[in-house]
Image (cartoon, rainbow, N blue to C red; front, top):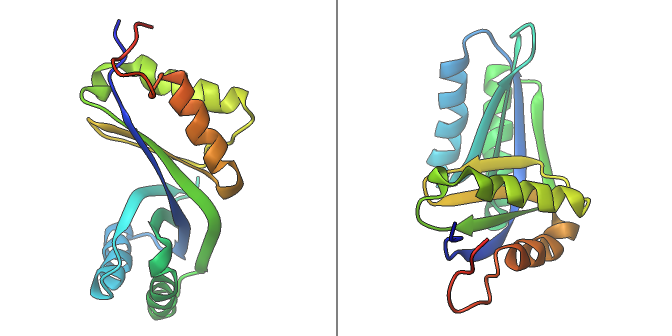
Length: 164
């Protein structure tokens, strides 16, 4: 099977985790994202998780590093208004992505990427996929190495895609 030709990129991002005590999740999620939208802060890689007893809802997402201070202010204001537990930020993360047509039809691509990063000791903190993109959030210190690993794995320096 031919490996699709990918573009590669990585972005330095800030992982944001927002935790709040609530049983009514949808209004909380909308309130949090609405507060960011009001301040013109775009979010990416949104992940929502419930604790086992469903009393706490964690919403984790990434924002551009340049939006950090604005996002922090907006989220701290939102947290205070709804009585949330707090706002956490991890500034030392980066997003590593591969882009190519038909990725969702080729599950081996994600599997190979995750395996290669894992074998190199690079922890994947978040994953996001779409029809054309697979993105991983990794520690900032591992970003350049992760990009090289993915680049080499899929032969991204080749003129034409190679056979796997």
